Figure 1 (cartoon, rainbow, N blue to C red):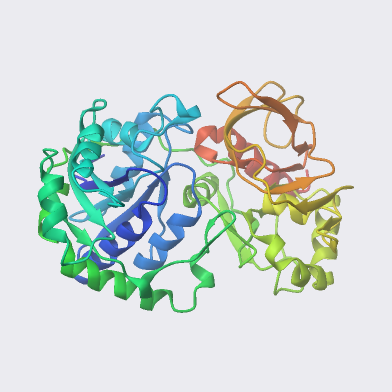
Figure 2: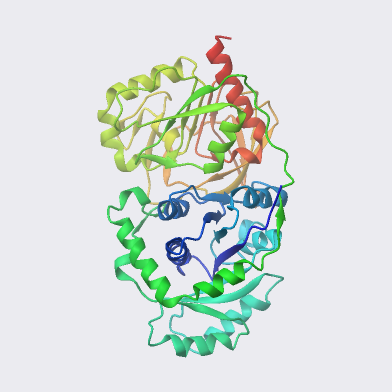
Length: 449
């Protein structure tokens, strides 16, 4: 399958330069014009795609060259950019920041090269004048790249001509500016931005950002730039269903459990799963007639009291998991299976207690290798994953070995024939066999095998 797939990558000089703000403003402004859109995020982030999804009403997808190869990310763009539409990709960290901090592998620059996507660099001038041109030229000349323009962020309309003249001395065209938009500011917390669902006036904020984008960005120029991207082909083989009739997998989805890769849901459906959403916060028990359980990440620590008060749900989850219901529990879902979280009673599946700290624990990309056969794989099989958490557990598990790209290693995860529970988040296309084995286990449960 081939798609002309017009597309742009919104890159940044570093975290905090405003990539998410500019990307959300651009998406909303283009949607007002009636442009058919798809959104993407470079890297493993969950929260930024929530804002893309809220802006568009369609899932935003992660493109990650640590998890998958270049063929797969090209295929994702082909499959999801609508015919006649445009794809907008938000970069990660600084443009060249890749795995382990010493290479640009899996960086926004790497993704842009691998997909032949024009990049626009978001720059926030702070205490600069002519040095702004030097900074931009440094990004332009540092390594092979697809940089094709600049957007100035946090610049007033009055100062824009001044900064534009300086920025253009770096040899890249300037596609406008976004001024400070106090009414469009999005708060943050320990894992990043506050989630989209928690902001009651989010649509108003997005409207203010769209107003600013319409006034300050060269939308026609950005659309024309997106259409210079060469066509792409999807050369990836589709997944094969592993069950003749669907299996029903309950998926925890509410304010406490909201960190999921949209593509993980796609993979499970392609393999033969029907996903059944439920709320550990609000529902009295697990849905009826389920064959599996998926507890994703999120912020259970912010809702520990309400989760604890919902005793019937805690009892339902504990009984189901201990009764052999095939279960994947990642990070926040893993915390929910503990006996307690910050002293509040949780599901009590695991003989362990968890608490939140003020310190980011070992984080980033890891490769997980199984020590023995389990729900998801045979002993010795590996999958690339991601960890990012402030919580600690009195028993993190020891059924997988985790190794970071820099060589740091530790044991983690509770894994049995029916359970995967640990801090690492899985991206199923990194090793689809893991997801296929999960769905097969659910089918066996359904059939009483």
